[in-house]
Image (cartoon, rainbow, N blue to C red):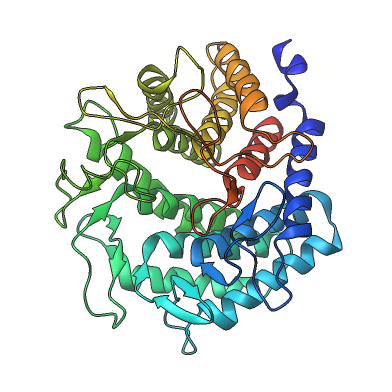
Length: 397
């Protein structure tokens, strides 16, 4: 009964949300000179107009590729090609052996190689291929090859994070976040190609992060590690709001892994995937749900105390999608009420009325922190489009 009543479990509502977001970006984000405006306010007005972060360049392609799959609109197909062309001509090195991480005013500002960025490149190429753009197929395979060459460490069964621009020196930091998005990319690559090597890599990454690496943390996912994959409890301790590497346990990553484990379960139903998915969701809700103002808070420390009380759009989105997958595969009603509560909270506080885009960041009292809907590398409505897309997939699975 709840599934019939809750709008966020109705395909028509989910499709309206996705199409609304894509319409906003199609109207406001396409640069005639190439790429996308990656900084937009709620009115769709750009800020810095020539800053291009590899992550946003790839994520916007992912959004419109999913739009192609759902709506078959020619303008969405053209936008995917527009985005892929910019990546090929500006982010990708002329020799094809690397990608610029950050461009500004037509010049590279950071050309180190980042595993996190390669994960989103693979995701963009996989989604484009799935949407019918055959030229993305060779690029997907090439990116996988480079990702393995630069970052894969077979002795640990995980990827390193950062390689110097001369392709000689790995940064000493290791993190779960890049590996989580690598797992996401492998799943998308498997779904686009049917090549089992991608599924096997996704399974290995998932097990090593959420099982092996949580043996000393009571099943909780720590973010930061040394180059020997030993927990680094102090990395960014003075920077709990760091964009990609915040200190503390991240409830949003717990629930994002829940979603990925259940997509893995869809393709290879192993009991440990379902068990860990439920454990991670329950831990996230226990430690980060705001009992006073609703929504999930950002981070908590090793003692279980909140260390960042902001509410990020992506945390709410990933949690909603993960709950939908749990409701799909668990024969109980444990997540129906939390799903409804979170969906109502999102509708009341994150979704911009009449636009379907989401506010990026709220304080604990659910007030928007700034005017920006999109920021380079930080937000382009990828997670909320993805959440709606994944809920649709869970309903059809």
